[in-house]
Length: 159
Image (cartoon, rainbow, N blue to C red):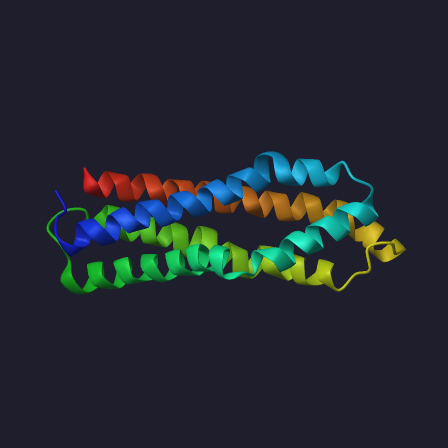
């Protein structure tokens, strides 16, 4: 069983990846579905407001803090190579760093940036909105599964 500093790091990893998975799950299961039912101008305006509100210390601490933490877990695991939990620690870190943080940077943020450039009531925004919802949500499903899987794998490292 993992103990000492590894235990604390891994426990924090479970908490962080679980919280991130929960936020993403909420978006995948009801937030985006609700926004998709709105007329495009309202949906674009609402999503833009959400995207602006997300870049606040409370969420960014959890989101970026968890990414840093999972990177620290990976580095410490590579350097110290513990007797137990090595595979789980590395896998959990990879799932979160690539499947959650990486997907956010490569897929979701660029779509958010493109949406923020559009005026909600324009024809361009109305045309972009359906593909934005479909593509953003698909990538969000990936982030949700990756973060939840990272939490599960970190739990397995503790067992």
